[in-house]
Image (cartoon, rainbow, N blue to C red; front, side, top):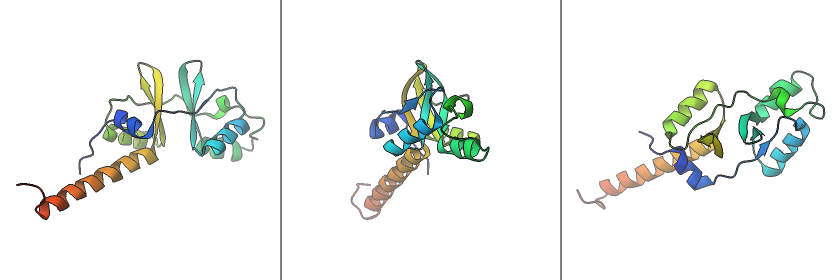
Length: 149
């Protein structure tokens, strides 16, 4: 099954609200924000520039496993850099390929170097599930004679 659609369509569906932090933020405070918002990552900004992504994976691998503490470590010390991003007119397939190639679960969406959204692997999976349901409905309708030949 070919997966059609663009990142812009995913953002239109889910919204473009993005939670951000700065490199100077303590990891503890970033984790608190993530817990409050029930999200798995924050886009890290220096002014209007995206410099990276801070995720639960960064915390577990770069704080806990290295014996650091979240109350004394800054996000800038452990964030994933450089920020791997995607454009709003890129395809869903390109998004999946980029996530898979880089082994990441979140992609900031940039348009003319401006942050306009964030796409997660969960967003992509939801899009694919919706597309599959739609295709099944169309095929069922066709097979049952509901669509003209």
